[in-house]
Length: 136
Image 1: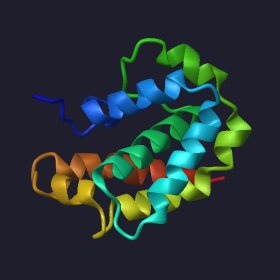
Image 2: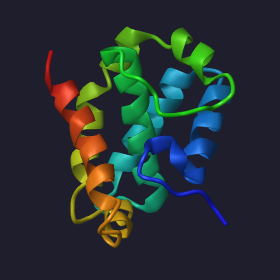
Image 3: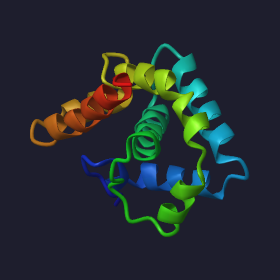
């Protein structure tokens, strides 16, 4: 049975994704490409939704000095190595991604909406991140 929680890194898919990005030779390029792929389709599939969610968490930490809700081995050190400028250049795509993730054409949004108890908290996390990205 997999992990599932309203916080970004309480989900096995998100944890697998962050492990992949930590291991990437050039994580900023890997993150940017993953975001572009997720935004390319009209319908945001489950994995693409996680890309947007995890990317938003990473950018929120690096750009906005927010706390990351994760206990992933090596993540604290890895986050310190990321280029703030390169990630800041992805901010607009992440905002578009959050809009898509929270929209009607998102598998992850559909799944979360089934949980009346946890959906508002999950949604609030993403909306808060989006609001911080819109403030310059």
